[in-house]
Image (tube, rainbow, N blue to C red):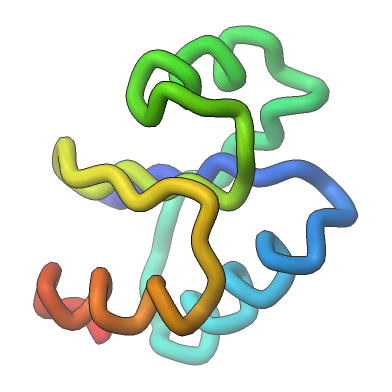
Length: 80
C-alpha cells in the first residue's frame, strides 16, 4: 500500500517533500486538500490539524513536516 501525501498547491514544504520522495523513488498517492474537501477531512481526522504536508504511511502519520523530519520518518519505514 502506497503512502498518502496530503498537500496544498504552492506550499513550499510540500514541494520540497515531493521532490525528496521523487529523488528517493518512493511512489505515493497525492491528495490536494484545498480542492478536495474529503481529503481535507481525512487529513484532519488523521493528524488533528490542517497543516501540510502530512503523510500517512500504513497508519503512521507525519504532520506539518519539512525534509529534515521526513528523512528519519522514511528511514523508520525502511524506505529512504
